[in-house]
Image 1 (cartoon, helix red, strand yellow):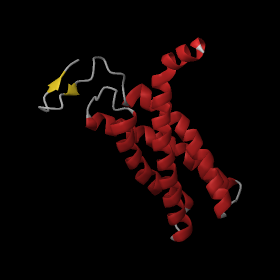
Image 2 (image 1 turned 45 degrees about the horizontal axis):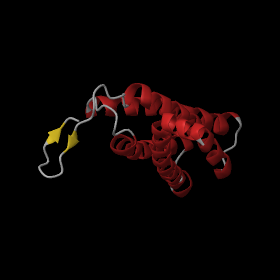
Image 3 (image 1 turned 45 degrees about the vertical axis):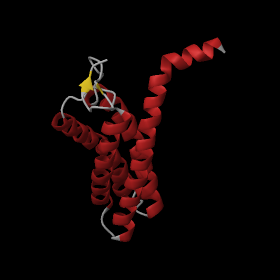
Length: 160
């Protein structure tokens, strides 16, 4: 039991961070998949156009969720900087999805809804691995000093 407690103490912050990242990611995945299918199957748009638009919408949600919940304990290095890097890295992650969907559609000649949704799922999975690693490395940086906490009575910020 002591070993389990020591392991938990050592990895608790990582486990909590991964749980939050996974929660935001799950919601963003549902949003991405729903919007992708709306554009692809509902409106009859092309698979790559549908993917770019769906990712843009879901990435906007994911940025807000990750900035203000998952990684809020990390240093805030400027909204403009983070936003730019976040969307640049999401653009790179989007390439994984576009490559898989493009390969499925134009190389394998599979353009039915099921095949394109499987391709989307594989692309999102590959992109998610890249996004988690890159967000921690370049977007939401480790805090270099303690994050100030607001005093409840006055609203004045004070360092601990």
